[in-house]
Figure 1 (cartoon, rainbow, N blue to C red):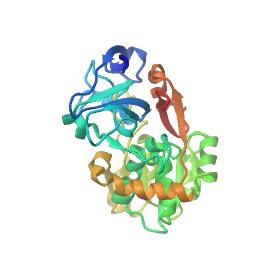
Figure 2: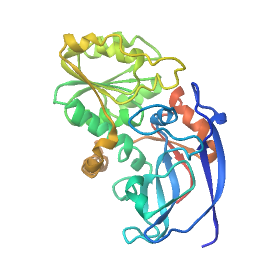
Figure 3: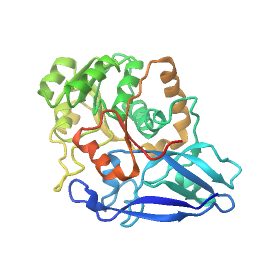
Figure 4: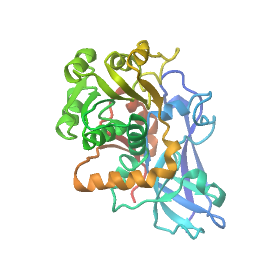
Length: 342
């Protein structure tokens, strides 16, 4: 094999507010061949997620921050191009924590930590493995099913409804027999959520009063709220809870670029009044059950009960600008960075 060059995107400085190109550096290095038990993976596509903004901050969280000078953390799909491990062969399509780079050399001892696993493209396309069948889908599945505990006939509200996690949550809730109301930004996204994904309604937070929309579409209150945005929208839903409601805290995209303190919920006493609970979801806690969720969700994709929309941006060099699309509402569907052709 001829010598390969790996282009990488590294965290150069921790951002204050929105990340810019100044927060990143690019490096190149020669690609070594795997040692005994190791695997060399070529990156095909990367998952761009709001959580990446949190990984750039110093401080205690559910996962260690990316260090200054380190390759930016990112999950993705790749192709094994060299292997000295009996569990993987050249040509295998795999998922792993690949990082924002063109190649990843994984030593045998690092394979469990990298999450390296073969994927079956018969179950879904490459981009669907970064969406419904990937981390966003797993987050939506376990957040709704294990934390939200949906029952047929209940009202489920999901913010960021046209995004990666939101689209899975809403469709899954419909499959489970719930009345589903989305919250999204813009008429096109709201129309897609209702007309294509089958939500019962969608509130355009850019065009109208979220509180009025919740009153109209959730007359008996909200039984489950799947929160991807935090801030004012979380407060609006808290004011509309039903008795025994469950609030699933997945993310707070409205707060990630704050330069001051994170805005906490003002209407939290609604939890007391309505005997409700609020609980966080970190998808890595459910890793041992991913195959069960993948099998169920892949079945819904195959029989047409679930759809998947991805927004694909091409080229490793576009990463800094592509990532900001998540925080400006420019992405429509699951944001994917295509790094190379198969």
